[in-house]
Amino acid sequence: MRKFLKYVSIYSASLILLIIGVEYMLRQVPNALAFKKELIEKHTQDTKNLIIGSSVVNCGINPAYLADSTYNLAISGEWFRFNQLLLEKYIQQMPQLKNVFWGICFHSLWSDDDENEDISSIVNHQIYMGISRDHNKLHNIELLSLGSLCMRKWSKYYIQRQPTMRCDSLGVDHSYDSKYKENNWLENIPSLVKGQHKPMLADKDGSLYRENIQRMHQIAQLCQSKGITLYLIMPPVHPIYSKLMDKKQLSLIHNAITEVTNKWKNVYSLEYFEDTRFYDEDFYDGNHLSSDIGAIKFTQILKNDILTGL
Image (cartoon, rainbow, N blue to C red; front, side, top):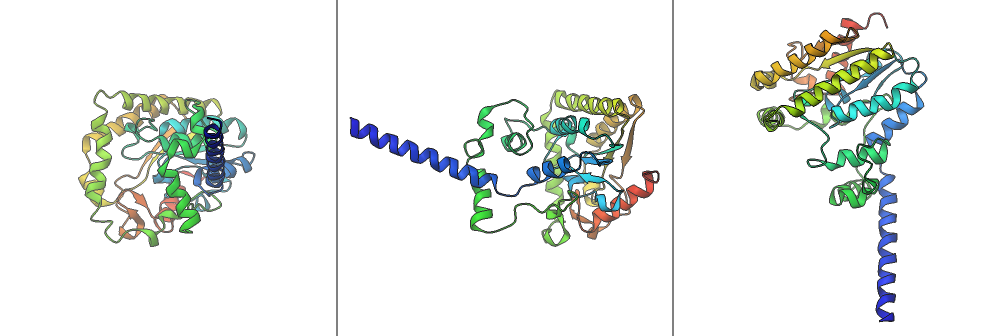
């Protein structure tokens, strides 16, 4: 019995050491959340303009072409819940913040960082940005929380020697550069549109839609209390995407944005969703601008439209 217990103890200790070692190595892998946390904490005192949202502005708005002291804190796959928590965490530390640019995509109002759907966003925000929605201690251990998903990240960085993060010094994600887009990206647009319509269909009682509108109001109120102007921005999509999208879904987005802009005097809507000034070369895929071409063009249009006073 003693011999058995000895072997069990040795095995358990070895397993714990292995988990600690792998977890440590995972924390050293470059990722966008840790990078942007460091970026914003380095510039809290001088930030005048902040970009938040998901991938449509993560790659679609380039601060270098917008205004001085502008940083892109948007994160791919980040929905309203964490947009709000992120802004709430840092807004108190930004005495010079004057404008917040919030990117809204076609399915934002029906999406959420839901533990039942995708736990990775919850875990990564808790570990790499110090933002927690449920304070689950297990979410502090990436290996145990994400399993095979984090091991793929480990393999990509340590075995395949591939980059795991392509953000520049202002926060733009260059994973969406035109050189990385797929050859058949145009043919994939119909399935992309269909996939981004599913969240609305799944929200049968409209509860998530109303919950996300409430988050919009809360962010508007927070910005107003600090004398900050909030711009709700819908970047352009490819003409094929525009043609195939569900018109009812777009109408509901318009209704939500109108409700918020009508209530809060510090909030403005800037919609470029069906803007015809953008062409194939400006897009990475059906609903993302290429970060090296389309984003520059779009940001210059933004600046010309609304930022002449910055």
